Length: 205
Image 1 (tube, rainbow, N blue to C red):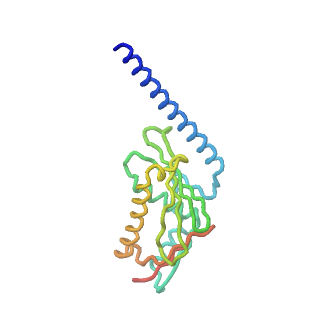
Image 2 (tube, helix red, strand yellow):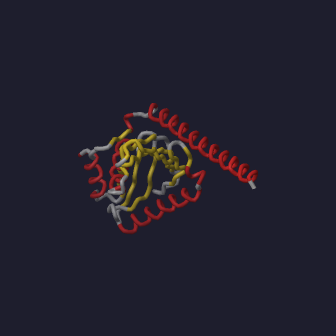
Image 3 (cartoon, rainbow, N blue to C red):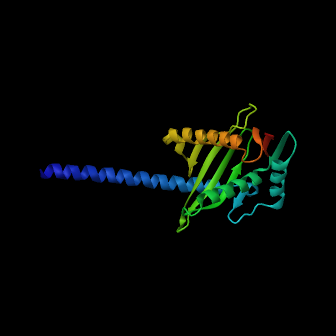
């Protein structure tokens, strides 16, 4: 009996050490990724907390929504998109205890990476970077889809593929709802992800 207890204790200790080693590996890898990521940031496309939408952007959005043209479009820079994403995420976070401190966008043709730094309000040192790879095919449609979801450099969608499916279904449902209910006064007809701009094309109801 003593021998069994001893062996059982050794096994539990080994498993605990392996688990702790794995956690340490994840923490070190996460910090290394963040250090490299932050060092490579293009500040031109970085939006920090306290940002207020500039009058020019507000004016462009208002002109697009109120335009009487049958078909019209709005062109947004990555910085402007980051501002809109920041404002939306901040509103969604509300009083949840999460603080959105930064939004960063890496633009490329048909593929944009959108990252957000989330911080616990009561624990300023506890934070993570969450990034999503947003893609658009070459069809004339407003449908966007996510190719990957990452947290501190780790691909969450590879660990839990269903999350990616649910996220893309949510995007598709949101587009249908927006078009059917006329939330922005226009029907989204096409979206283009370009290297320096995002172009949204919409038609009147």
